[in-house]
Amino acid sequence: MQLGIGNLGARTFNLAVGALAGGQVGTFNVAMASVRGAQIGAVNVAKGYVHGVQIGGMNYADDIDAPIGVVSIVRHGRTSFETSLTESGVNGTVHHGGRILHNVYGVGYRFGNERWWSFMLGIGGHFPLAQRLDLDIDLLYVTLQRDKLFSQDVHGATLQPSFVYEFARAVRRVGRADVHRNGVARR
Image 1 (cartoon, rainbow, N blue to C red):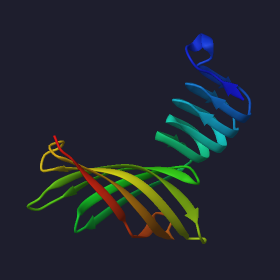
Image 2 (cartoon, rainbow, N blue to C red):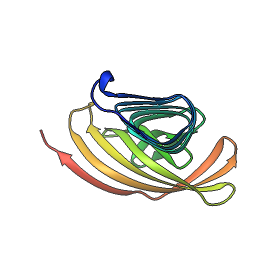
Image 3 (tube, rainbow, N blue to C red):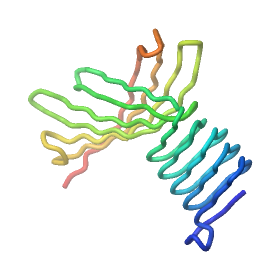
């Protein structure tokens, strides 16, 4: 286990040159090989497979089970792009992350008399059910702006359980039910 806080002299920077078993806790954590355990800090970097979790503002790993952060980059991770067109408008999202957990980033627009922009940020879990059938459960923070960007905000949370069937390598069909909770921010 490596611990570090404060400045560089007081071990803010944790470096593991070989394989790491256990964990690193500090501002900047770097493992130059595989990790079995956890990295917890503002920035976490692992060259190799992380059998465990990274928790931080920015995470990077070659491959990982569970990255939890605002931005998580997984070199050999799962990445999918999704678009949808509903009565609420058009939305585009990116799901990116590890084998079990992923981040969700999205943007949307509603056309018509009452136009809205939407921005989404969230985290989700991925659960394989059968050879081509998966269950993804995403929890999203959504903000809506009416007419012009950042003119009036409505904030909300959305829980999205989705069944995903893969027809071919790049063709997937999603069936989803959304549960919303919204609140209005007045200025």
